[in-house]
Length: 299
Length: 299
Image 1 (cartoon, rainbow over the protein chains, first blue to last red):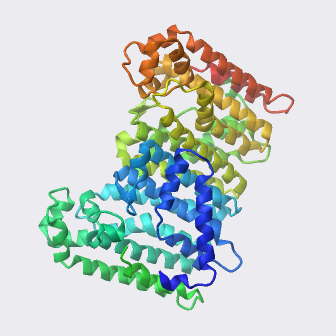
Image 2: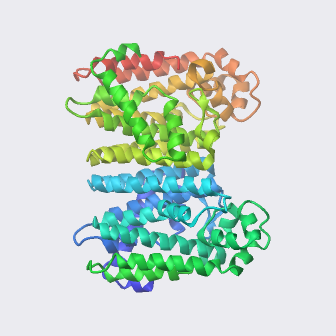
Image 3: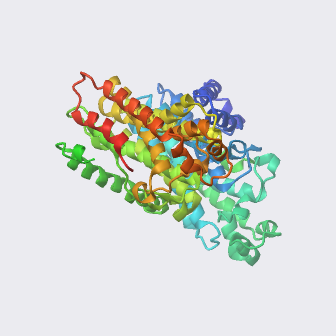
């Protein structure tokens, strides 16, 4: 994200954000602080706090909001990995592998509560409400993912609904928390969907070294992502693999159906939609750059 | 709790609270709403919202605060049952048994987020901070419970620390959210510890019909509660059972050591301490009644 890093004030913001995240997570020593620090050290793109910064009005302090949004994101990852029994996240061992189920559950709840605590300390009750709505969406999206698991007949619309809940609503909240501008909210929602589709394509194509995750995870879990559900329509082997059948060779066949390219077209459409919401709004140009970066990234 | 039910306005409050809890949980149809409704229908004493009502200053609306506190409590129960793989809660099947791990995880996160959402909607940022701190304590207490599991040498002090985090901090928050009076905060903390010790005694003595739980759960889980750790000091069979050894006959031996009576004395001391914090404060007399009720209850 070199393009975005040249923005005045951004380096300071990102450094302050990391410092504040570290302090927040360390505030109560014990398992939850250790597991929280582990989740934090694993890094991540800090894309949601970046959205807060780039959306924020002059004069507003984007640090507590950025911290809160990132903590909700981290909490959801810790809980996701626990439920999915994922072994790796960003190339590192996940919290439940190191600290057990209860450690991971406590850590997720702790990060979640800290997020609301940080935001509440600013006195912004409307902001807390926005974040709570996004957190609700996350929980509903995760439940929907499990309801849709092993259902290759999941429609594109159902998939997009899940993306909104699981990913894009928090992007929207990050933009709205910074600005309270509905246009930026719509931008965030479309950007989040473009981001998630790209993530799902990378799961089919990426190497562990680039993405920090094991490739083909969605197929193994039976999660009907856009590339997988498009491929399943064309290829019976993929369809059966997605429904819970044998996985051998199925991932290679996904690529053979052209589903990756078609999914990419949809991601590009959402990126273009995100750009359209910026038109004439006088927003920071880095937001437009992000609509390209999220679909061009390799991890 | 017949004594308390005669309080003017309380029946209306409790009815309104139940209605609002139902609406809140049902606001987004799907697994999380279904599982939330199930957790809600299982009932419970609604002791924390009762504390909010009895502590609240005249003119304040105790409904959103009571809802928020109860939702945090419900969220923690759903997550506890998931991690502990408990089959029954209040005589009903637990959320993870009906809706699976991801359903229960999503439900807990959803209830948690709704709690903050309800409270944030009142515009009370300080209150959100108080509730977030209590939620942090809950998560830390749950992690501590697992760290202490199968350690019969856990000290009384360590046990009491865990009780504060897992139970009493939310009692304190309920009292403080209603009143912002530090004396009532101290009352809530002591009351919560008395309540938890009594719970732990009931786990050794209660029948499933009375408590809605399977008796002896703590011993099976290796949770060093006050009666169990006191009994373990006197009886090698209990000590080994608590450390993860054979359970046969151990629960009966707990009673034989006199540990139940000694634990009850400690509970009564905390109930007395709770009463002392009410002295001269001009608080509602029902609060004093509660200090007797929590230690005399059978479920």
